[in-house]
Image (cartoon, rainbow, N blue to C red; front, top):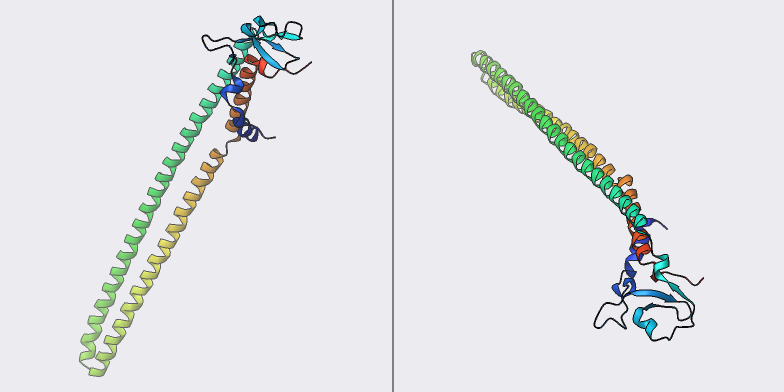
Length: 233
């Protein structure tokens, strides 16, 4: 069973009444902790329970004999601290990496925006220059045509309008093409950024160490309250 699935199922049994080491029956005025376990009655016993002598001839186990020593508990605490510190370091590295990627995204986006701005300015300038050249040619031709025929003047006017539209459409298409290229580049930048973010989100090392940390904490709790899980020998 994967550790994540185990933790989810284990949460169903995190009840105080199950994990408590205080005798409910004899704790009305003071907290009487369990000190023994009766194998015949299959229950934990406090000092008050023993005083009743109901279990005097029963097979019992003294909790103090199986209680973990301080050195063992300290060792487990050190292990938990190690995992906690390691996980915190990895999380900080992850946050810093995400910030670094976000900065790179903004820088690249800014560069691409500047590039498209410069390209569009060049296109507009070339368009205006070509339109102006066409207009000047038009004026020269009109002067010459006026000396000849009225019909030729009308034809030239129509030709001028057509050329103007062609030029405008040509540069309009160039602008649209550059915007399309710009959009694709921006999408590529976002895709690259999102891929890095996805890799960081699926950081198996943090997940693995987090699970190991949880298991270690469970072992620590289980050892402290071992009387709850004692099995009949």
